[in-house]
Image 1 (cartoon, rainbow, N blue to C red):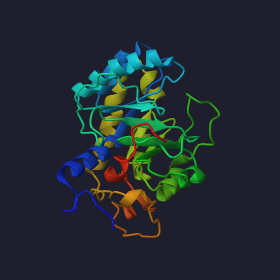
Image 2 (image 1 turned 90 degrees about the horizontal axis):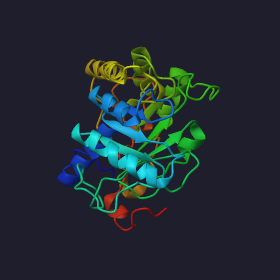
Image 3 (image 1 turned 45 degrees about the horizontal axis):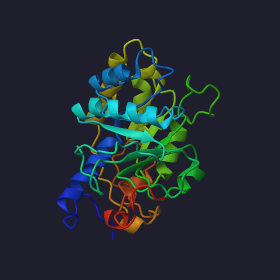
Length: 293
């Protein structure tokens, strides 16, 4: 049976965790790139958070682990102070040996573990509280198992990866959102409020931004502008249904449509019409130690 966040059978603590997950994969999400940043990466992130960003994906995968560990430790308090969360790119959560008290309750106890994985793997994902995956086409969406959200890219031509594509465009994004079993963050070349609107109207729950904020002379202003654009658009639209959990880790049944989506796109996302969006099964996950694949 499909278990929705609002179902009476779902424990209140789990309901709150599921709502928190949905909030994390909406709005403006920042991907770090210290090489593109005009200033110190920590300062750029702090300015973006002051501008409304509440979720940051730490990339910098070329750095030695010890340096990434230090960077993660420095960025987490910046986000935590604003009620935000750091997601780490890769299967290593970069947690210190002594974990601080979690701001978000973890399924496993200790710190909240949030990971973002590449399309290439690992499959299945490591057990974590929140798992995202980079996707680019239908084949990669079809490989999803227990992920909580995906990025779809590139939506627009991007200066960060010239020649990467071809760009999906809003129509291509809408088509893939319609096939995705989980919520989607649009990624690639998103620099203006008009592009944010196009992505949300195509069915994305939010946008992932890298270069527009990293390269900006005023990261605070850019983050504020994009965040306001997303917020204003949502204010004008009916609320989307609360996405349900996936029962027992099963893949969603894409044929089961309830037509209850908010109407942002003519193509109703699979996650809005089946048991898919916030799909970690806590009882099943507890049987596996963190980090197993």
